[in-house]
Image (spheres, rainbow, N blue to C red):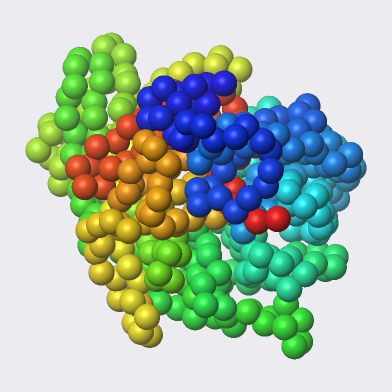
Amino acid sequence: MLFSNRCKDDIGFGQPGVPEDDRVTMDKLPWLLLPHDTQCESLKFYDLSRNKVHERNMPEVLLGGVSVEVSRGWLAIAKEGQYIRDTKYSSYLSFKPIPDTEIYLFNPLSGAIHQLPSLSTLAPYYYSFVTNCIFNMGGFNVAEFIGRVELSSADPSKSIIALRFNEFEANNCGNLALCRLGDKCWSIFPRETNRDIEFRDILFYNGDLCVLSQKIEHVETHIFKLTEDDEVRIKFIPVSNADRNPFLEIEHLRHDIDIIKHFLYEPYFVESVHGELLIILAHNVCYAYHDEDEERLDEDEEDLEEERFDEDDDDLESFYDEEDVKEDRGDFERFYDKVSGFSVYEVGPNAGMILRSVQSLSDQLIFLTSGGRSVSVPAENLPCGIQRNCIFFLENDNYFSEVSSDDQKREEVLLRRVSRESGICYLESGRIERLFPSFNRLLKCKVGWFTPSP
């Protein structure tokens, strides 16, 4: 109701007089998969073109599951499986059984279902993540483990399926696994022990699996073999630093709030309507809340502007109370991240993968999400209220990292986050319209943009 009413009242999605039938047609605009949980027996999608909600029943085999990714007209449904005992990889809690997670690809229009290897085959990473979550955070949420699921083709039977998953470490770099339908287990990309390579967004483009990374300087290509005669080329692409400010800027909004600019940059891949590979960089500012009686920052604003993002400093630690990391208190996080704008880059077709800045998306719209494959659509014959040259964005992250330390040790922990924003960015003016409120609620699913393709 909130999604539907806000869309209708604030920007007038849909055109009057559209018949209220439920026929499946190829829509110009993607559908928005709405939030749901394990008790839901159906999935609901908001249709931007018609300003209505479509409902699709969940097959019996998927009941109890939730959607954790959207890619090429398919949903990745995660469902708790049998409890298993880990006696090999976990150093603690190994005596306790942990839930396995079954993964399915589900087409809500055709009803087709394909089962993928379970997450327990991602050893030791899955075991470590689950046991650490149970031990440190009181529970496990599979939506926090799965980063992205990407299909190389809209036909799963001909597709390579890539999975980017997270590790429990606060500043985790993620990891990558691949499979095909019928495989019994995931094939994990071999990490180099002497390198801290990073996996951010992933996208199949022109037959290659492209991986965004912020910890490399040049394009790197790796050949990964699933079997002796089945291989995929993985291309690691560095995120552009052209529009990044390496310095923190801090403004004192009032006595208990500071605004930290250039705090976070979130990169996304998008394939444009013309076939170019685009990198979208989301800029975030951070609102840091602290008590009056807490220790203030030791450096003044001028000194802080010279602090580089990658230095090991503990200035921000004074914004936190040690008790805030306790999940059972339910305190509002001291960090509130807010999207402040976007930059768009085109990846060049040559071997150097040179990036150039894109100033306008005049002939297309971009639908951006961390809950699946982001999409671009032509800005032609748009429904009433939809403007061209815009980015529609959705956030799904349930947690963020915090670094705390004392004289004896330095520790990284995970905290639940409250600031999951959704809205529209008008690139020409830079204005951001936030459609839905941010709320302190743990999401078991991920919302994303679903492209109807029966």
